[in-house]
Image 1: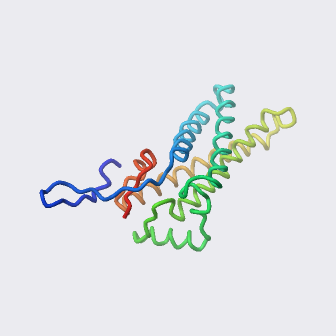
Image 2 (image 1 turned 180 degrees about the horizontal axis):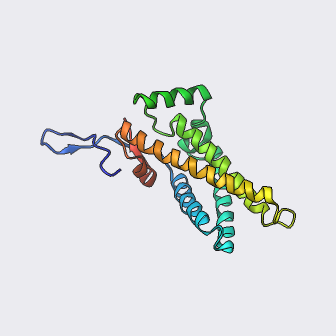
Image 3 (image 1 turned 135 degrees about the horizontal axis):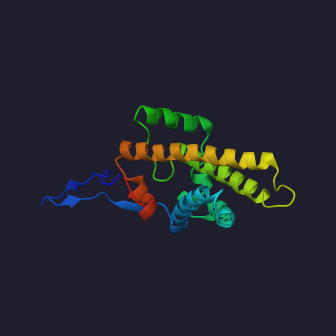
Length: 190
C-alpha cells in the first residue's frame, strides 16, 4: 500500500506541501496490535507442533488482551472503547456507504473497524480461555473444549481476512495508508 497517500499539493515554488498530520494511535495501541499479529501467527503455526511455546504464546496473548481491555477504558482518546462503539444501525449504514464508496472518513476507528475490534477481542478471549482450559486437569482431553478452541481460531482467521480487506478498501477510498498509520501512529488531519 505504499504510495496510497498522494494528497500533496505544491507551494509557490513547486515543492510538495503535505497535509498536516495528527497523532491517533498511541504506542500502547500500536504495540498491542503488532504484538497480537505476531503472537497469533506464532500460536497458529506452533499449535500442534510445539506445545510448550504455543501455551506460553497463549498466555502472552491473554496478557495483551487484558492490557487492551484496561487501555480501552482509561487510554488515549482513540484507544477508548467509548470512541468507537457504535449502534448496529450506524455500523450497517457505514458498511452500505463503503460499498458505494461514499463512507465518511474517521480519524480513529470507523464504525465497521470499531465493531471488528470488539469482535476480535471477544474471539481472542474465547481462544485464550479454551486454550487455558485445555491445560487444566478438569478439561484436559475434553473434546468440546478442543473443538471450540479450533473453531474460534478458524473463525478468527476469517475475521482477520475481513479486517485486512476493510483496511485496504478504506485506505484506497480515503487515499491514506492505514497500515503506515498503525506503524507511525499518525494520520492526515483533514
